[in-house]
Amino acid sequence: MFNADKFIEEETARLEREVKGKAIIGASGGVDSTVCAAIVGKALGERLLAVYVDTGFMRKGETANVDKMLRRLGVNHIVVDASDEYFTALKGVIEPETKRKIIGEKFIRVFEREAKKFGAEYLVQGTIAPDWIESGGGIRDTIKSHHNVGGLPKDLNLILVEPLRDLYKDEVRKVARALKIEVAEKQPFPGPALAIRIMGEPTRESVEIVREACAIAEEEIEKAAAAGKMKLPWQYFAVLLPVRSVGVQGDIRAYGYTIAVRAVDSVDAMTANYSKIPHDVLEQISIRITNKMKDKVNRVVYDVTNKPPSTIEWE
Amino acid sequence: MGISILFNLWTMADQVDLYIELVLDGTSGRPLYDWLSNRQSLHLAEDLYLPAVPLIMRILVVDNGGQWTHREWRVLRDLGVESEIIANTTPLENIKADGLVLSGGSPRVGLDQEKMGKCGDYIDKAGVPILGICAGHQFMATHLGGKAGPSKIPEFGKMMVTIDSEDDLFKGLPETLVAWESHNDEVLEMPPDFVSLAHSDNCKIQAMKHTSKPLYGLQFHPEVEHTDNGYEMFQAFIDICEAYKKA
Image (cartoon, rainbow over all chains, first blue to last red; front, top):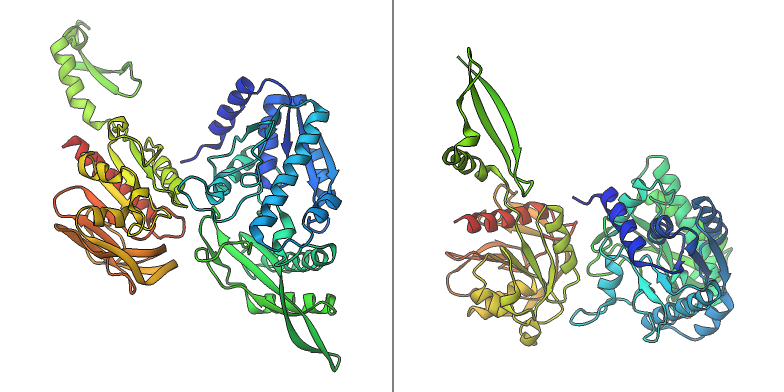
């Protein structure tokens, strides 16, 4: 079985041996990149700078929380607000793969800028096995281009370091627990963030809707799990659909968008089954979303598909 | 009466735990049998104890481009087997292994057989047990004279599989189990000398094996977390490889 302590020891030694100069790491505050920052930080100390990019697609309160968490972790870090750049680059973009590739490349351009300022020649990423597997290449089909793999430009002028490449999420969590990292049990969140939870053009307006819906879904599910009503799913969120349907609000016709709630159980993201959430929890999510955003959303549905045939995220 | 003292000797390989008994004369304290000075006896002792040492098995995963190729590698590694993922274009002479897993993959075996690389070579000449999974299983069938093609009802995700014959691969497993699937094609006709070991409602040949050679095929995916008893199936395959190596 996977031995986290041995992994940490071997990787730290390898990084000390192989990474000679300065490095930056793309840090989202999620489990993968935080574990990676901790391990690389052990090996490089002050020679490592963690760069958190606010793309404008972050969840409610996320940027502030990650900023605090990285400070507590004790790794050098900066927060870069690049939201204007992202919204401009994604104007009119609907196709999921195009979205993912634009976002991936933008990340790299921001990292290149920050690397230059810091004098770094290495780029560390918390890439894990499903990221490169699903991104395809060679005879392997592309399921979706993960931002840290499929978005890499050919002219990347930084040396890529990916210590977690062969691990799956459950193994990364084991490493996180061994390192006593506070986000060890945090649910996965994709790099392109809420941009791929909007089935359509990611605008400041559409991201606001899905951000609120995600916050409500997360809150209600976490509350129900804490109360022992259900097991906390592996991943749980909301997706904004471009489908509009008719409703009635205060005796007036409504014609609003649809929110899909998704929750799955998995171990490694390579297979997943939809979570059997109690109906009263789903109902509470639905009531809160449709009341809070009555001008925008008047229908909530629950996704009951496994992976395969679907994937966990919708895009 | 003699007094027995156990010496624990470590061999160079650090793997063989060799116990040598030194029997002393109860009154004089002198050795009755000095095993260490007697080469013949020492060799005898090695012969006696070596079989208890687990063999380090080396089972390679041949990558046919599957989404779960790396999972196969992970399960083998979790089970203590030395494993690597190799390209399916690797020449046979470069492969040193006690067993091979032919992974699944995006190639439609019926349509783009050439994407399966040298899998045919491995099946014909590797001389070690082979487990074909999904595309690997379908390729094994077509390569040996059977038939694979589009499924009438393709299966994706959770399915119930019924084990019709335990054989070595499913020893001790429940008769029906949840298996995760992901296939557009399937084995339609088995090659000569193969028997079917399992089926689902939509797919008649979920598992097959050769009646005399160590060749196995599975349509479903034992390597994913969501398949019941997947680790047991891999352990069974490891045991098959181990038995074959010893024979």
